[in-house]
Length: 167
Figure 1 (tube, helix red, strand yellow):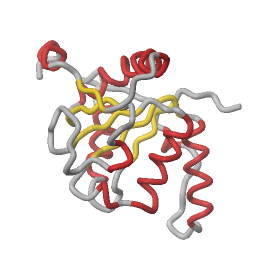
Figure 2 (cartoon, helix red, strand yellow):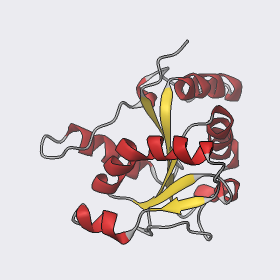
Figure 3 (cartoon, helix red, strand yellow):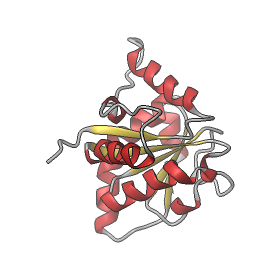
Figure 4 (cartoon, one colour):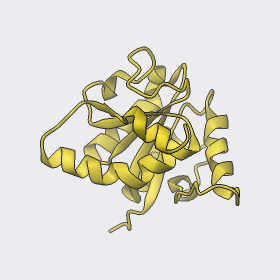
C-alpha cells in the first residue's frame, strides 16, 4: 500500500503551469515557510506516453497523495481529458480538495470552477503561499470532520483567517 504523504497539484498544463512552477519556487525559497511533498516527483510522465499510460501514472501519484489542490484559471473548467479525470479520481479516493483561484477570489467561483466541484466538499481560496500553506495544514482535518458530519458543498475561510495571515 502507498504511503500517503504527498500533495497532488492539478492544473491546466497548457495555460497555468507558471502558477505550479511558482508553488515549486515558494517551496525552494528559504525565506518562506511554504512546503509540500509534491506528488509530481513520482512516476515521470513522458509526452509520448499513451493516454492510458499517463493516467496509470497519474493514478499512482494520486494513491500516494493525502491532499489534492486544483489551480483554477480561465480555462481549467474546459479541461476534460486530464483535469476533470484527475478531479473525478480524487473524489473517488476521498482526497480532501483545495481549490485555489488564480483570479484571487476567496470563495467558490461559479464562472471558472470546474462544474464537477460545484456540490463537492472543498475549500475555495485565493492563490497565495500563506493561505495555501494554511489550507495544507488545516483542511485535511476539517474535511474529515465535515465528511463524518455528512456536509457537502464549497467552503471558504472567513476574512479573519486571511487577516491573521497578513492577507
